[in-house]
Length: 373
Image (cartoon, rainbow, N blue to C red; front, side):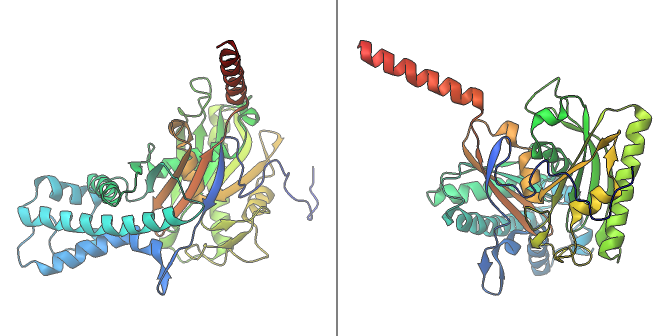
């Protein structure tokens, strides 16, 4: 059926919504300023490597593992090797950079916790590209100790899923689970300052209704920062990745839901436009004439014979949503995603109807017990 050019995507869910099925999004993309820049930049991924380079410049020793190679070419696995098996000076270099980075990360967290939206946060999950390294886990643990030394009771822990996958898995939490009752998989997009990932998320609802068993079935990666493409070309490339995945799903006989969850940097408005924070993406994604969800829907109007629904939220929010099943023992929690920048989001768990009914029954039982006494 031909579509009119002025048609708009179905409004199944709200982009950038503050109320989702499992949580209330209290804050995201908080822009804390520090002098002439953003405080979060002090704890971005590059900040650790900049610190490592400064300490390396101070040594006059021959370094077997962290020697005369450009700092950007040193892999996380090489840093872990230096930390575990390197000479004392190499181990000292890594420990020094870890200490510097932990101090900067603590400064960011302390400022966030002073804001109204982040007040009373009990736990923060740390995700993003720096997570996949033992040295990074030590930096996070050291940050928690610094906070506790200042009397701040906060728990910090690495995100459960690989960050490359968490940004896709979280897309399944952008819609109520009833939308997926007849399907096994969804499409998801994770747009970052360096890479764009598209993937098929296997929901595994038969194993866990809370999506704790959701996994990536397949994924395509495009390191867009290595190419000089404009915005429209980038969207065409993204759509091509989705079409490849849809073709793969059809070939494999998958029951793919007509839903695409999107995580994108910046402040996402209810109409799907990006208000700010997308400066690291190719071209101008903040233009009033550009709407990514609409562009994706225009290119892929249906999946499996059903009209496509596209929902977009901030990329840190989406990565954080992958933690929902593992945050049920706290009420207020947040996520920090360490990458090209420092993404952030704060959540409050919502009580499910069954939970509310149980709470009512408990209160009634308590009143009856008190009356008898």
